Image (cartoon, protein in one colour):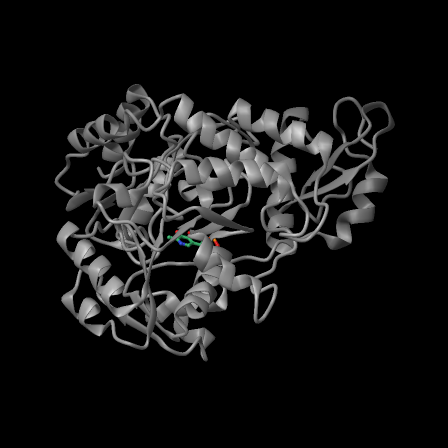
Length: 455
Ligand SMILES: Cc1ncc(COP(=O)(O)O)c(C=O)c1O
């Protein structure tokens, strides 16, 4: 249908012409025997009486148009303005789009790719596990060594109280599991969470979200959840004999990077202990070295009763976990038995990938340089339009005067090959959460582009 000069035959053009709209590129994948397959494309002008000639190099562009349209049509959308880059490769600190344009990744898949994209040890572990077995049975019944080994490795790097791991599919499911666990362990029902906190999009986790705009449309939500300001005495004062747990992000991420006051966190710990409530730290975004220590709570000398992990836990594969002590976890085994069950949670390929990623993080000492890199960012991010930069390690928010200013800056950054984003509850802030492997030179490049984007 397309000859070697990529001239679309008239029959083909005529066939598709009724489906076309004026002024649009139309793309259809068709079989070309010599090439196996290729694309047939039309530069649409409905008044044409014969098929247009399409230069071969345009075929590539046309394939982009096609996938964009299919993305909008067949993949459920979460916003009317997705970034919509067609990513065809990712490696180390970079993303590559279908035109071969390279983007320095300043957000690491929203704190997933702490060790960079496609770390070779992770890819190797995935291949090896895929050669052995994929899913075999729902969670908890069969011994699957990737789960066992990863759980053991994690607990070796956690305080002794956190010695038992329940693997889930996602961060939100880890939150759900932890809520259930707290109810079982304490026999109480009330939950305290923070304003401007984010814990996931499933109904239980959504009930914990601390922003009315994001949760209101989905009422009725889970009852018994009360919200207070992070770092506030009112939150601590609200913990009473009905409180099953207090769930907080160790560092509030979507609020635009808000760190806890150390004395407040320690008082919160003591109050939970005294009133018999579990203290649950959500480190789904701030764990795995992102803050400059392996776990965010290490900065504050406070250990939670339950730790929530996700994102970087899987080394780029979907995996979440809630971690507590054995005694607590045992409550999920009886009355009812199977107190939390999941078909795919702790998938062997995800656990193998996560374990390899965690080993790489530790062996390659990626956390060691986080504080220096943070300092370099802070020294370079100086501009009259920057109102503030808040950071804990390589988890940073650049505050501008408005959400519009942020969107304009992000757009310009993307044009210049720097991929960034904003925050759910702080749309006036630019997100910085790159792979921890970002180099000093890359940090300089990133900051130069950000400053230029503010002009
Ligand atoms: C702090 C925090 N908790 C929980 C979640 C939910 O994780 P997931 O999207 O894997 O369900 C997220 C996701 O962004 C998060 O940032």
